[in-house]
Image (cartoon, rainbow, N blue to C red; front, side, top):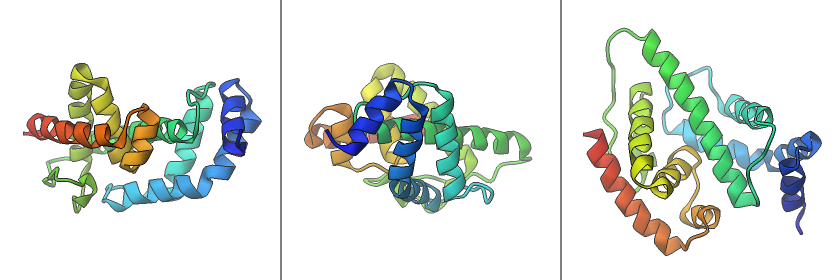
Length: 183
C-alpha cells in the first residue's frame, strides 16, 4: 500500500495528522489544479492559488471525515470542495455587484477554453449542475471534476470507477445538458 493510500486511509479514520500529511504530500499537485482553475479567469484578485488550496484544506479538515479511498477519489473530493469555495465567493460577488457584466461562456470540447468566466457564469454553471445532478449524479460529478477540479479523463474514470471511454461518452452528454441548461 502506497504512502498516499495509507494517509488517506488514516485520514478517513479521523487522524488529523494524516490529513495534514496528505495535504503536505499532495500540495504541489493541489496548487497545479487550483492554478489551472483560477487561470481560466475566476474574477477574484483576492483568491489566489495558495488561498484556494488552503481554503480547500480547511473545508476538508472541518468535515471531520475524509470520504476518499485513493488518490483519484481524493482529488474528486477536493474538486467538490473547490467548487463549493468558488461558488460561495461568486455568490458573494454577485450580491455585491450592481448591474451585470456577464461574459458569455461557450461549452466546447474543453470547458477551460472560456477566456474569462465571471461570477455570474460560475453561478449559472453551479445551478446547471444541480439540475443535471437531479437527472444523473455521475454526469454532474464528471463536470465538477473536470471544470472545478481540472481532472483529465483517466483521473475522472478512476474516481468514478468507470472506463475512460465512458467518461468521454458521458462528457458528450454532459456538454449537451449544460448547453441546454445555460440557454
